[in-house]
Image (cartoon, rainbow, N blue to C red; front, top):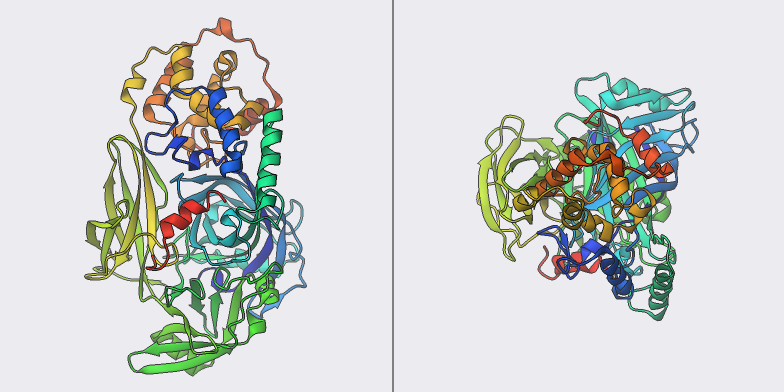
Length: 606
């Protein structure tokens, strides 16, 4: 039943975003070859150019990629009787630290958070500790969420989701009924673990919520940052967003990293409301509006559609199930239950909702959202492969939020061209899963693939994150010639390390990539940090995951042949911390009226 059933835990707060954004721009980074531009540029020259570009939109050349929750806490629980604020778990902090990375650096549709753990509560108190099973994936980016906040990605909101397998969960209920009920629910074979879904919105840049694209104040903020960068030192410039979220059960047959509930899509290209998800329980309908209703001003007041009717519709007619009043979806309600709205239904309404599609109608009769019958939801996201390898993409086909059986047709389209082209067709297995084999692209590439269920489906116009389901596959070039170079320091630095030395000034705080002595001394640590077996780890290097096979071979050959006599540096505290945290083991647990691609690119700068 997902996070839309009970028991569930609500939380809200804020999150920081500190990505290095230099690789978002095709004039200074080639996402195909995974190389900074121009070819052969020195680290110092590249860093100077990145600083020069700050006033042109490169808002964070000294980022660290870290994203962290702050001022985030359990805001309520629901154990089946509605929102409860009076139990021991409420008010407990929610802790998260991850690395924000885009699989496709130029766009905004492939964001992910690599992390190791997440915790609700505190050690010694009411607590749920979660060890990572899969990374967080961003989906359903909503470009119409906040037209008032026109500052880079400030107009948008996005759904983040991951799930935690039960083997990696620890429950300390103490006096929390919600935690105890979640722990008990995990005894069922139908429950795989817990799902966390949260919505990030109202993003602020340069620490100033009043800034807008292209204004004198924004230009002044960029100029001030540029001056600090020129003066020297490390000058990160993180953005921050508000967030609301929910923790609940992860059931068998549900996708781990994006919603698998009944999907209600925008009914018109004008998109007066954004995609929502819904679930029926034995007595109620719960709708997730966390990403759906826009804010209309700086106070974050919600758009008022008037009374919103929830309709069950099929070929025989329609039935009104309930009506939402504005106080049920305004800002106060949104923050109280993280955008989830639960509507009790009588038996007749439950039966109608079970056999019909759902619609949401505004007070003036406008259809806001309509349910999609079939939905092909990826189970594999943001796949990285080396040139010469292949990957298998798995897709869960759902109808009414439940897995279909064998024999449902699914088409996969290559969305890299301006007009997507059919790449493959197959049918689902007994569990409703379709699988597609994807080969690497010679020389490197970043390819998006769209999945459409059903026989003779309409040709998708491209990725619209509100409407289409998709995944990205990044092929890293082999760089075979590089692997055959003599493993000298000059070759290793100029062919391998200079790229991250140039693009990631933050690394100077931990490991100086241009210092031969440090690289030699910390060779064993570098091996662990760059080992593909640790790819999902928070501490994996490079953070942006663009090291090619040839680069890795040359680096490891150099580390194997490094003469001990040149080791001279003492271990810095930061490197010592990295060594302590890394285990010795190699393994660690489109709408016609909207140019979606252009919107994606526009989110990279003002």
